[in-house]
Amino acid sequence: MFKAVAYFETEHARKYLTQLCKHFAHKIEVTYDQDHGDCRFPRGAGRLVSDDRGLRMEVTAPEEDDLAQTQSIIEVHLIRFAFREKLEALAWQRLPETA
Image (cartoon, rainbow, N blue to C red; front, side, top):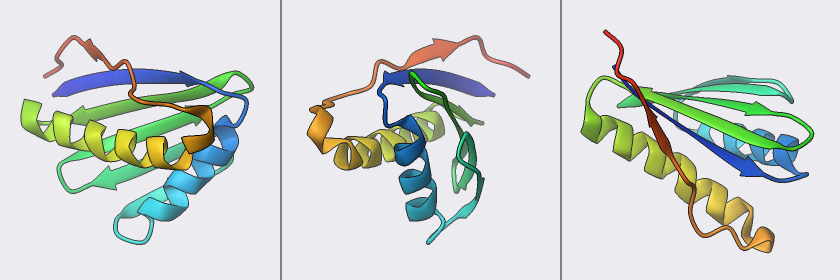
């Protein structure tokens, strides 16, 4: 299993988490509250966690290409929703693979 994480420092983390989850819920299975969101994409899973300082995004997928696609979906939508903050890209960090 492939895994990557990114963190976006913002005071609007809870707002973005809710926006992302509501948007994704139109097409995929999503569960969320104001601090946690779990999204089941066709090729991977995304977990969003908000706090007072920012939004943490964790993506897992069975294949490297699936991981990249799932990261891209989350990133593109977050950039669109956070346009006032001039976010251009997330700094994803790969974590060690798990079995």
